[in-house]
Every structure is written in C-alpha cells, then in structure tokens.
Image (cartoon, rainbow, N blue to C red):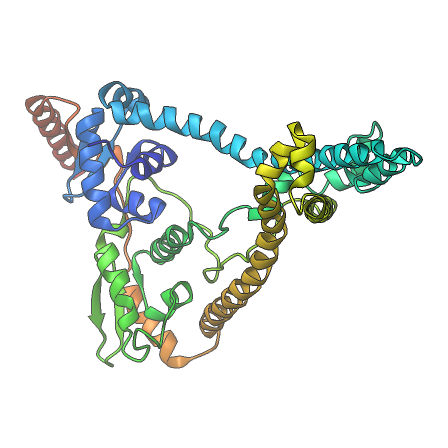
Length: 425
C-alpha cells in the first residue's frame, strides 16, 4: 500500500526531521494516524528513528525519499501520471463549454441564413434575401466584436480583474470555481493543533471553541463535551482543578523535532464565502449575452423548423440541425438556467457561512473579556504547559548507526561528562 501523500507533504514542509506531533499539527491528522503513517513511511522510504533519553522518537527521512518510493510503488508513478493527464483533460472539459457555445451560435446562424435564402430564392418578384443576411448578423454583434482586431485594446482594463481567457470564463460563469472551503476540516485541525502548541500543549475549552461548530447543539457547552473530538484526535488528557474547572493537555503535541517560533493562528476559524465566478464582470456579461443570444436564436430557429417541411425540402445542413435541434435548445436553456439557479443557491450557502463565522467570532471575543474565572482556568492550564525540543544532542539511539557503536560513543560521552564534573569539583 502506497504511503499517505498528506504525511509525505508534511515531512517535506517540516524539513525531513519530524515528530508525531509535528506531522499531526502540520497536516491536521490525528495522532494515531500520524504515528502509523510515519512508521510506514520510514519503513518504505529508508527513514531512521532517533530516540531521545526521554523516550521520545524523532523520524529522520532522506531528502530524496519520493524518488525512493516512486521506484518502489507503481501506484505513486500512476498517481503522478494521472494528475498530469487529468490536468490536461479537465482543461479541455473547461474550454469545451465555450467552444460548444460558439459552435452552437454559428450553427444556428448559418442554418437560419440557409433557410431564409432558400425561401427568398422561391420568390420570383421579391429578391430581399440580403435583408435577412443583415438581420442574421444583427443577432450576433457581441460575437463578432469579440473577434474584432481592437478587442484586446477595449478589454485591457477588464483583464486586470481576471486572468481567465474567454473559454475559461464561460466555464466559470456556468459552474463557478470550486468550493472555497474544500479544505475546511484540514484547516480546522491545523489551527486547533497550532493553538495547542502555541500554549505549550495545555489549553482550556474556551481557547478551542472558536474553531469548532455545533457548540450548544450537538454538544453541551456547559459540560464542554465538544472537546471530546479534540481529545480523541490529538490524544489529549483532561485535568480537573481544585475548583472543579477542566483543562486539557496533549503530551504528543508538546514534543518537537526543532525549535520554532509560535505559529500565527487566526482568532477563529473563518469560512470563505462562495464566489459566483472568478471571471471579471465584463467576461460574465459577455457570457450571459452570448448565452441569451444562443437561446433566442434557438427559439427563432425552432419556429422556422416547426413543421419539419423545410428540413425535408432543403436537406443537408438544415436536416442535420433539425435532428439535433433539441440538443441545441437544451444547451441554450441550461446555459442560462444553471448560473441562475447557482446564484440563488450561493446566496443561501453564504448566509449559512456568515452565521457560522459570526458564532465563532462571538466565542473568540469571549477570550479577550476580563473574566476572573476564565483567567483562573488559564493559569491552572499553564501548570501543565511544557515543550520538549529533541535536538541531536538529546538522541541516545539512532537506527542510522550500529547499536554497539552508539553504545560505545554514549559511554564515552558519559565518562567525559563525569570527568568534567570531577575536574570542576
């Protein structure tokens, strides 16, 4: 089974020398999963274990461990290949909607011109077919303006608002740009773990509440039951003060492989609102205009093809369009209907996001209020605060070297230390 890519990425970001607490904090994983993943990764990638005199373990990995794993696991090679292939395929899918829109407009326009030209050619005394030609082009001014030579000049200011090209903007107008909170749970646990580490592994429930949801609903706020998932994930332990107040400390998160500054953490977990589109307003207006143009053109074409006799008489292109007309009409309806439905759905989602952000912000503000009971809990939690940094000088055993050699070196260090103390005395 291939190693966990989340753990691999965390190891790289942390400099290839990590503890279980380091990886759990960086990746937002629970302590048990991080420990098992590190053991598996060390076994597969040629990593080493460094054991400190306190019994804590540090994992050391070679900087080329991805190349080692790539040669060992075909799944990793396939994942990397598929990621590249999917990037190309997804880009083609994105631009296909804009391509189909332009193709639909062009096909409808040409078909209407063919039908009207054929109808006008049957009139002996009336040769006004050219009038329809002008009318046909009248339906599509925006399309030809888009392809005009000075289009880039006129669009330069709007391009400052968006890096999307026209075809990408059409996809963004239709379907948006993905969930802005798709990594919300990962951010939640990363920020919780960082808060715990910033307080040296000991916190109170009020310090964690701004990063959780459903407090007072699924969990009882009075009894701090909402802390149970946090304790389970990071292997925490509760302690009760003489006054009956509960604090929590997390031994695994108190151990680091390297000394680092406090990590900046937001005051509360903020969800990002959904955007309708990353395209500029001009691009969205162009997409909507072309969509409306396509829909109106499909309706007009449908009236010309209504009884089916025109397609039977002319044949060729007209007969082909008659066969796919309902596809063209469905695309025209969907092109305008999907963004409209999505717009109202986003308004509903953003109201919910605003309410959750407001609740978390309210809980965060409670921490800055001068409350004697709250300060008493914080002071009691500080008694359990600790931080251990496992440096190379603290390592008593490493799987990098032979055990007998390490024991000999360790005994020499002990003898040297005793000799130094004797000399000082």
